[in-house]
Length: 249
Image (tube, rainbow, N blue to C red; front, side, top):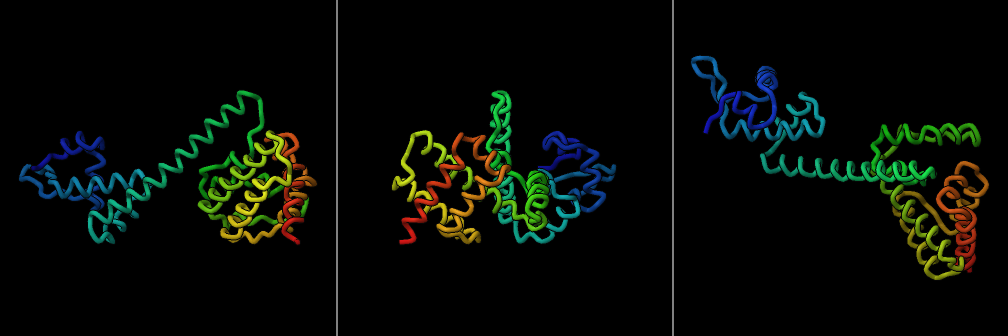
């Protein structure tokens, strides 16, 4: 079956002008041109256009799309790769939408949102912007220069999710008045330390105590925890200290 340029535009939701441009730059050529000068497209051209539009959804430039299509081994592999990239983008957008929804709820209540939850789903540039205040604070107060140029967005999103989960666990334990010696807390700290070590963040029980103490001494981090749950920074320190005493024997 064959289609005119107008029919392709109507079928795909693109414009005749765009299809003409794709032809002009060599990205999508019609299968033939009639004696009257009409562009005609077949199924192969429609399949290529589908792949082009998927790449456009991924915000590829026309130059990058051209290179990607030139490098493709076959259509199925291209579609699988596009599916993977679009799925990752979808998951990221779902995470960002959830973060926005939670931000709206906290703002409407006049409450401060847990800062570990404020940046879920961000990419590298967004993380750099989100961390700019903390970077400036650490530089001013501690002369520590945070390297935001070397940000691994995927790793930060994963660590952020773990931080949120860990602090929520502690906050709920505090609300339920668990004894800092509770075995469930001990198990959770063991799991959290294992996570940090598996993500190139070497940590032992002693270092966790030092981190918890820093969260009490430092205004920025203490306020972050206390805005989530009153007493959380002190509870975190007590739990970490109890854990370290048990594991130093």
